[in-house]
Length: 170
Image (tube, rainbow, N blue to C red):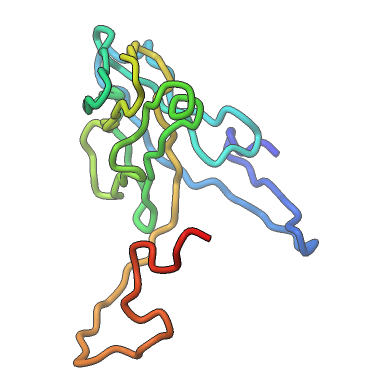
């Protein structure tokens, strides 16, 4: 179980099937002056997301209701067929109301600019983002692309156009 170093992990699912997971390689480059900011990393053996850190020059205060783009000082090269999703950290969300506003944010495989995290404060108190603070999670996902086929009509379903709470709350 050494996937942080790039080896194959084996797991047994609930049906007793052996599953193997081979990590993909994602190239990463630090922005000049950001060598002190930790690289994204998995914080536990089976974590789905890598925690990513803020590369702010000075602390940034997020006031309640405020949204800010927080730099990471990182550029990444994701292989085609994959994306990296940016998701909130549950502890920051629960304890401070800090979230990723466009969650999950998507970093496409052809993007090569600096990764920025759109943080918002839905809490009641100001929150200070400091350099090196773990602010979000990066989750690598496979991507399936679709070919759209225009039709005159669509196959109807029992649900049909019901949405936005049509099933109620109980």
